[in-house]
Amino acid sequence: MKVAIYGQYYQNSTEPIIKDIFVFFNRNHVEMIIEADFLKLLYEKKIVAKEYKTFSSHTELDSTFDMLLSIGGDGTILRAATLVRDSGIPILGVNAGRLGFLASVQKENIENFLQFVIEKKYTISPRSLLSLQCIPENEELKDLNFAMNEISVSRKDTTSMITIDTSLNDEHLNSYWADGLIIATPTGSTGYSLSCGGPILTPDVASFVITPIAPHNLNARPLVIPDTKEIKLKVTGREEFYLISLDSRIASVRNESVLIIKKTPFKINMVEIPDETFLKTLRNKLLWGEDKRN
Image (cartoon, rainbow, N blue to C red; front, side, top):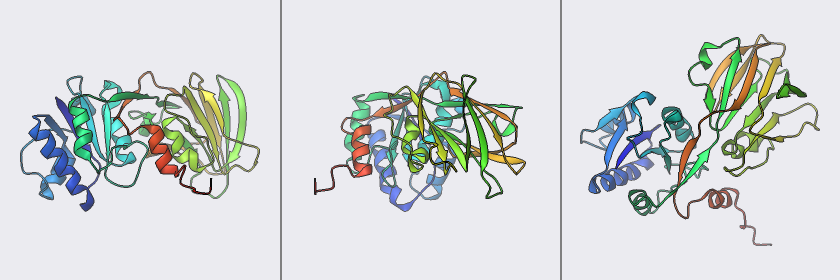
């Protein structure tokens, strides 16, 4: 078995988790290829001493890999997705911080979860992504032009609201007068969109969510649309530029630019371990059933 290992940052609390993973995989003769910056950090902290092969770009990940193991939180997985891209390599998130929706494997009983990996007793949950085309072309958005959670536009350098003209398949939907607008995938529906009043979608729903950020008109509500729709945005405002974010990546875009958002031709495959499903995570995260008055 060949596994890529990626970590976004290091905290003291993650040291036992990392050691458990390396000990388990070495004991079971799993070939580990470590992301170069992460391995350098592990050497500096003296977490590992053995030499390992490394990778540093998405071009080095191919079909010979059985899985990518992401150690961190949900943000780490979103960055791992930019490495996996359209390779089809499944991603397993090991949660090294607070409870997340994507990094579902908890540090407790991690060896049991890794045994499921070795025995391939897991399922794959394909996740839809959003792609972005900017007209005229924006150099900052040229290479990594996709998002796993959401694409959002928001005001920049001003407290004034912006106007976002929105159309679906070239049919006018609405001109949102708001602080911004979020286009979320089912995976991203539990993130920024949820905090702005958007609905939760299960990962297998073939839909996207359009959620306004602090709209001036209170009747501008979140809208669920089929993921076959092409979304076109045109932003105007008092400032010359506005911000666009693809997950955690941010760029400045000039007013009057046209943004075309649609589903990518590929998906990200997330690994689901038995008893660590999306619905269980949802119950735990939102404390459903914890109110004993019912």
